[in-house]
Length: 316
Image 1 (cartoon, one colour):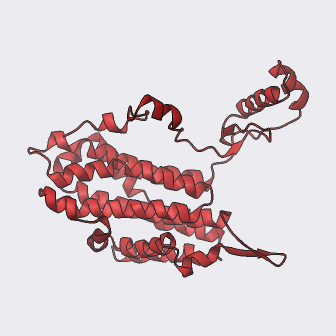
Image 2 (cartoon, one colour; image 1 turned 45 degrees about the vertical axis):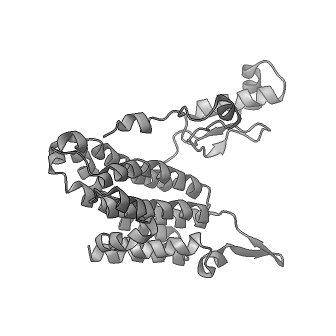
Image 3 (cartoon, rainbow, N blue to C red; image 1 turned 90 degrees about the vertical axis):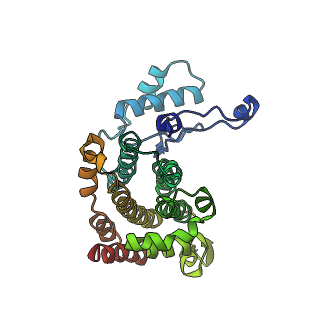
């Protein structure tokens, strides 16, 4: 098999020449919510960072911009009466993103355990499928990164890719034929996945409309003001729709995980499997999307995604 930790560790992989790495450095994976102030040099923070920390960072940025030498002087002079909210209430988006990514991460943690427990060599389909699944939580983070910016179409493109990868993993998992694994396209695997996860086929169609710029999807970017036409790049409703989509995708991920893990009875006594089982049992995608829809009952897209997941839940 292989060492999962060696390929999932969060560090820059030593690939490419020194010149290439210097010219194209890999950025941080973390996306920050806002800048600490309106200074020329943007420094990002999350709004749930300690208030004193955000205030001190802001003072440091302003000190540099003012060509001053004393952060304390700037803090006392310019930010003395500036209040930073301390410990804001938990937002729905943070809670939902954390819950979805936890589903993927816990699933990956369980997958790391089975190769040492089974009394055989993993099949080719298992091996390459595991490599694919090891990337899912990272891809899901990137999809949420676009969703958090209100970029619906960009988030949908990543989500559609994830769904194809899940479908392909299910399709090749039982195969020990390298040629069959090599020749099976991910796009042709959706039908097989749909038989195991009723959400998959309908959600894939919705995602494809957005990824392929179908009229019924792209007309929603059109807007107008004062007699002029324009196109939305991002907005709050796009973010809400993207979140509903990613929650529905996580429902499919959970169903795929249950399907895959049921083969490995040896896993059931491991602490990783028990943690996954507890977490997945508490993941209620329908309730989560319903709560989003309650905030925006004008969104036909959120209602469509909600109905896709509801129908699957009723027939699951």
